Amino acid sequence: MQEHQGGNFSHTEFLLVGFSGLNEHRWLLFFPFCLLFVLSVVANSLLIYIIKTQRSLHSPMYVLVGAAAFVYLFLTMSFIPRMLLSFLFNWNAISLLECLVQMFFINFIGTFQTSILLLMAVDRYVAICIPLRYNDYLNTSNCFKFVIVSLVRNGIFFVVIAFLDGNLSFCNSNVIDHCFCEHMGLVGLACGSTVLNNIVGLLIIFCITVLDWMCVLVSYIKIFVSVFLRDSGKSSRKAVHTCTTHIMFLFLIYICAFVALLSYRTGNSLSPNIRVLISILYLLFPSCLHPIIYGFRTKDIRVHIVKFFQSQT
Figure 1 (cartoon, rainbow, N blue to C red):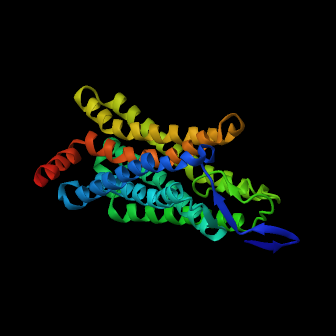
Figure 2: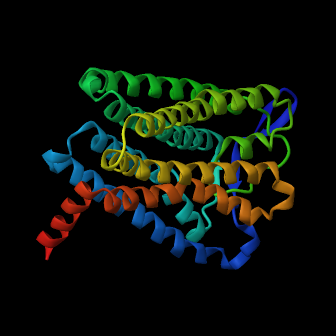
Figure 3: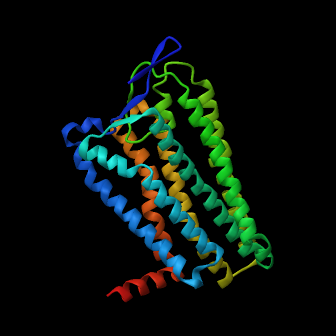
């Protein structure tokens, strides 16, 4: 379907053809990605259930772990089911409106994870560096305000980018070499000027991702400086161990984001299949590892998970 806009035909329906190089074997991708999807849904749902039902885990830190699991659960729900149906039944067509809605929710939910990770870093900083002020800073009211501000910030940015992308003219190809709609893939099909779209995209990267990561980095630098300058021995080791889990997961997210971004900058030197795979794993891989890292590495959560499985046998 096409519309006539400003003298040019503009596509209003697109085809998501990620992994098209596999041809008739593309359907086989259903099985590994379905397995990862089930792992993500089951593991994150279990983590949310354990934290919700155990009163001893209702501290701000564990509530944030549960909130992150909730984010990852909905992030995978926003694109994986449709992608699996595309692999199995070749349901590749998507309207421009559906594409923009999917793009909005993937970006909106995906970037909110950095806000939660920032709040977790602040929680560790206050708990370790200024524990006597913990209840003053990390109370329900302040956490709620932080969440609302982050949601409003992310919502405004991605409504703007969806509006700008939706007003572009797509008069050439309507084939998106990806398994879901994303900003750079859609803008790459536009036949008019995309300068404003690119500027807003870079502004979003700085105001959300870069800014949040800088604050996270400052928080952990202050934690380690405080620990090694003021404390020693067992207390230092305990504090460092408390932050190790968060740093491991932050490092994982950073590597995934860096590789995904680099894959676009070096798009001509990478095969389309590899680039699509990297983009999918950037969203899916952390959601699978989050409950494993926080569930089994964190002693308090691990104990309740073991008890849960023992009660089921």
